[in-house]
Length: 397
Image (tube, rainbow, N blue to C red; front, side, top):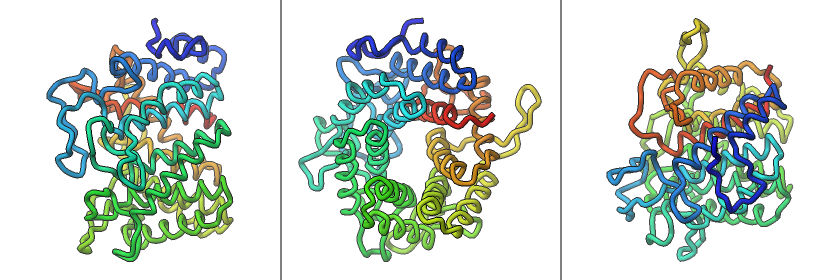
C-alpha cells in the first residue's frame, strides 16, 4: 500500500502503512499504535490540500461545505482549506505518536509539515498575537481562546518531547493571549471568543487551567500554578452541576448554558488530577475520582457488541470531545493506577475499528457502524489518531 505522507519529509518517512505492519509485528502489545499510524496515512491521502502544508475540512470535499461551530457568520466565505480547529487536532495526533513511539520521524513531520501549516493561521496584525480561526491570507477571522489553548498545550508538549525552547516560547506567547481574555466580569474566568465576549465557557477555562498547571510543572514559575488553581476553582464554583458534570458556559448576563459536553468534564478531571499530582492534596484526587465516575455514568450507555460483549458506549458524544475527555482519564490513571475507566475507552476504540471503519481507512463518527456519513470530518479522524496513539502508551493489558 502506498504511503501519502509528503515526499519532502525525506527518507525518515517510510510508508506509514508499511510501518504499521512492522509495528504490529515488533510491538505485539501496541496494535493501537499501528492503527494510529495507518489512520494518519489515510488522512494525508484524503485530506491534504494541494500545494502546501494545509488540509481540507472534509472528505470528500464539496463546494457546499459549511461549518457550524463558529461564534457567528464568520468573515470567511470561501472555505478553501480547513479551519484552525480540525487542523490543530492533527498537531495533537502527531504529538501523541511522537510521545508514544519516540520515533524522530514524527518530530520531523511536526517541524516540516504540521507546524508550518499552523503558522498560516497566525495573526500578528492584532495584539496580542495569536492564532485565528481561518488562514491569515483570507483576512481577519474570529480568534477563539479555546482554539489557542489547545495549541498552547500542544506546543508545550512538543517542547517536553524535543527540548526545543522555541516551542516553550510559543506556548508562553499563547498564554499571554489567554490572559487578555481574563477579567473581573463574572468574578473571573476567560471568555470563549475575543470578538464575542458574551460568555465564559468551561472549554476556555478548564483547559486553560490544565495549560497553566503544565507550564508550572515545566518552568516552576509559581504564577502559572496560582492562575491554574484560580481557573480551576472559578470553573468548579460557577459551572459544575450537582452530578459533578460541567455545564457549557456562564453568560455575561448571569444565565447558565446548561449543555453538557464530554470534553469539558474531561478537562476538569485532568486539572484536578494535575493539582493532586503537584500538591499531594487528596482533596483534588477525590474531586477527580468523583468527576471520573460521573463522567462515565453520564456520557456512556450500556451496549452489546456484535460478538456479544457488554461495554459502556460513547454514543453520539463527538469523537474529538471524547479524545479530549480521554486525556483527563489518562492523567487520573497516572495518579491512581486504576485502569477501569481507560478500559472503557479501549473497548470503544476496538468497537470503532471493527465496526465503523470504511474501505478507505477512515472511521465513521458512529462507532457502532449503524449510521453512515456522506462526508468524514477531519477533526474526527485526527482525534482517532490521538486516541489510538495514547492507548498504545498505556499498556492496559
